[in-house]
Image (cartoon, rainbow, N blue to C red):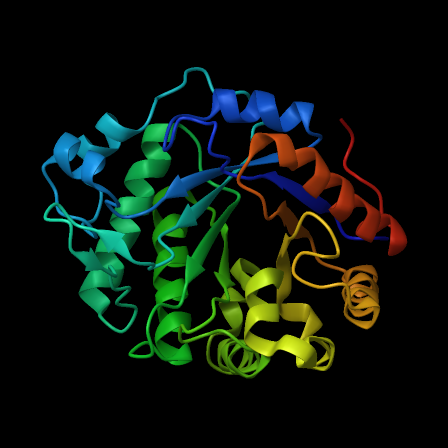
Length: 296
């Protein structure tokens, strides 16, 4: 029996940033996606600073969540969403200075505050996320730090709600986890030291970022990633984005066919007009691997 494949409707620019769930859900259904992506960044720009009175990189408080998100009631019973948390990229603060909000997975107090923020957002949206994507941040964070943080975040959901979303670590060039070496180390540490959270953790492979990091070695590098760790894919809108290397795509397709756990596929696009292209390309990859789209 093949594992369930979830298609994620990405956070396109035409949507009200932050926003709510219902508009995203309606667009997702039209695009044959069964999960919607909701941004869960830290305070990220001048507009949010002015609205909330908080600095760039600050945790969302309950009042800032209420200012930045829309509460939709009732939430459809079949609605599923994923949270895309802060990618730790350069932002402009209120003075126009370029800063990178740090992700402090090595700091237990910071991780605890992050858990409170995610739970507060989930409560406000009215339902728990199906998945949460996180980034590794700078190299002050080790894979051990990230694994411990996932254990804390997952445990916070289990304690508060009785169930946990899947926490997916996304690779990003020039961060602590960017290549197959770091992805392997992350999974080995998790399975060796925290095997009880294996169900609630995995990797969301950003293919564009992976190709940036590995270049012509992408196919060989991809083959070294533990398949059991792959629970998500950020899929570009076509084979020429970022490359047209048939060996690489053959390897991706074969790996998808081999997976026996549920996984997520998100078209890596930001314009609504390109979502269908992204879904079509990803669906073609899955059909190539003997899979089908979820029902419309």
